[in-house]
Image 1 (cartoon, rainbow, N blue to C red):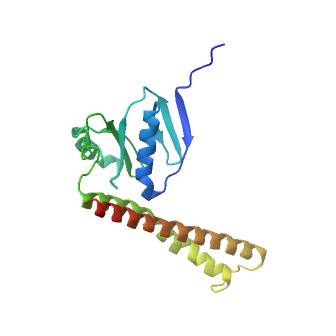
Image 2: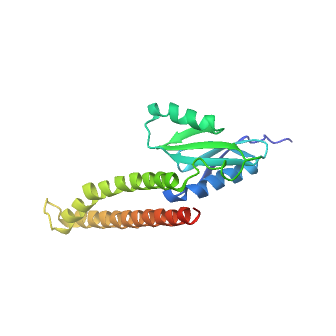
Image 3: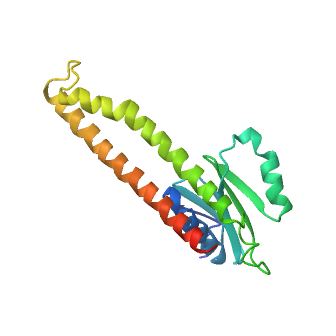
Length: 193
């Protein structure tokens, strides 16, 4: 009774914005264990069976629209990186690790470029959250607390107040966590100069 050999593996995993290095390490570890990264939507990673190999994975945040990435991807290809895919402005690259120096294993060798990428990545995402916070959550909390009246009486108003208050708490925690992560990375990169 031979079983069917699985050649595709899907793994649910989530990395915070500033944990992109952990994500790179995770993808490299999976490849070393015989699972080549194929796709992700940010929560679900798809791998295909391959020969175990030491591979370097890198993630870059260009902020470029998909139609403007051809020259960008060609630049990395010229330096030996294989472009894999882009998800929400994050571009995934890989290359075999054998024979590469530490400098060749990085997409960018200087600290300022790395910090600029991390800054753009975190503040672009956090900026969107702050915008939504100001536009949606805060006005609704004010509305349901009675500071601004628009017919929000009764159980519905209390339920919505609790919901929006929880969202506010989650947003504040996430935003502060992302900013702390950025400053940790900044300190790390500056200490390696």
